[in-house]
Length: 251
View 1 (cartoon, rainbow, N blue to C red):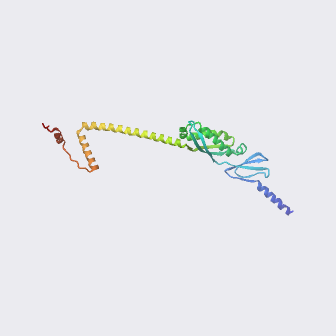
View 2 (cartoon, rainbow, N blue to C red):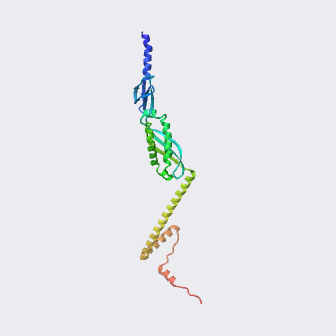
View 3 (cartoon, rainbow, N blue to C red):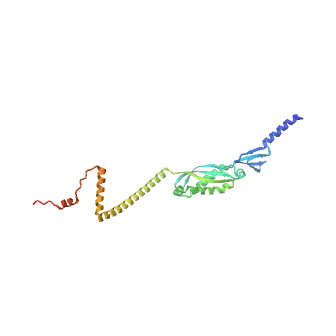
């Protein structure tokens, strides 16, 4: 009698082992009974009916999805290549399995389509200056369809915008011209300020002879320091005397 209990015990142990399911904290299990949805498994220790129930597991952590670089024509007819990354998370494990065959593939194709649709509405300057805003608009466009699949889109980030080589050269020339224009404006403004300062200084020197003398002394000092020259000072009265003496013309 005891001999027959051994195989029965082994069968019970095997059946019990087959009925055990351990679900990780970042997973959710979806149980199907004879092909029909039955319930959802929570993290931890779970039991199911062997041979009649089977489980599908879904990762509910935030995941990333790289969007293949898309060639898009902007509103002002400039071809650009854009690649983006989509952050998403499964919030309903049952819908992600039942409502769509492969939610990762479906979400990727949908993201590519929405990326082309949204970017095509903007010109190049707006596209380069408002990547964050365009990313939010793509997120809103994705959120509606993916809600039916049990997926929530957390964020959409545009990683890179690749421009044609001729457009890069044209933009570089434009930036160079703008900087040159700005430099000329700054130089002209500086010259205008300098001329006003010289005019004010001239008026000050004209009204104060002592200021003229101090300026002369300062100029001589600078010349002597820079060129190491010998300067011979001539008194002003002697210079006036020489200028008043005119050589007589020979008859």
